Length: 256
Image (cartoon, rainbow, N blue to C red):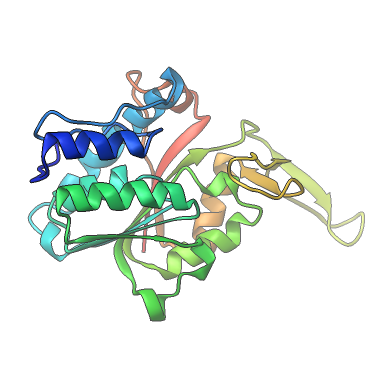
């Protein structure tokens, strides 16, 4: 959706240029926009997310967007937040650890006059249902596989979700169970696998941090352990990015 703005093209162009580089492409109805620096691979993943997520949301919340509250966790520059806000959601709250991303999101909010959207520099684990509320819709896109403790992360997200959480991210390729001798050689326990890797520098300033990437089966087990009642995997079509087709990335709808 193009964003309506009352700002002049000259001012808008100046501000857009001053906030470069932009990861997402935003288009305004006065023909000014941002140019994404993302490579073909990242753009393909973004396009696939859009193709899978919004048909579900438009059907699920059809006719009642004006009553929907949304929390966009690790919102980046707010691209998905603004798509939800433009659909008429009652409130949209975006949080991200990076101040430069939130600065860009707040500029788009100002330029588009989004009174139903707000953005803050926040950590997922500082969010509280008592202080921040519980949201009808939560977006947990591209983040769980960067966490050292995804179980804690999903429990935090579950506490903030009233209806449905849209989950997207990378999963480990290993499809088999692994086994441990639980306490003695006679008691063997098996379960799905996770991969431990070094955290990406752009997602963690601490060089000693790690990321725990679950397999698809492990991810589903974690989602249920966090308290979600039902999880549905969006089945990929051949038109999507190859990572979704090969189940290296997945999109899951988790219902309370």
